[in-house]
Image (cartoon, rainbow, N blue to C red; front, side, top):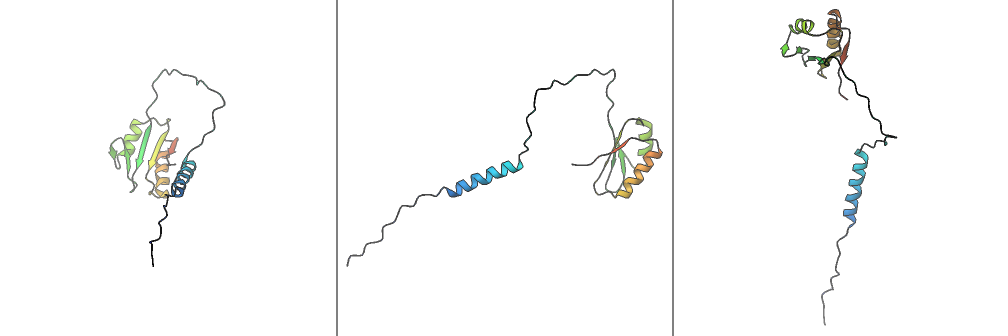
Length: 126
């Protein structure tokens, strides 16, 4: 009896997994890309000359514990420094920590209004 070992077939590498990866990457990039429509025509923006330098923005910070901060000053002296240095007609930006209770923000806004700051912008993340 003549027993021969079975002949091995040559197996070729399958490219299907590579194609799957390419399509997954394509889908990923299409889903995460921001597609903006093209501008219909070129626009040259106007220029302006200012007689005075723009004022720097005034930012009042509020920590997690509802402690106020302004230009390196922290604590109860902030309101005195803020009323002395800031222009009450220009916008005051209120940058509060996200964990501060809304009641605390309302109290701070009331105090700012009582001190003459009528234009307060509450900054939020987007």
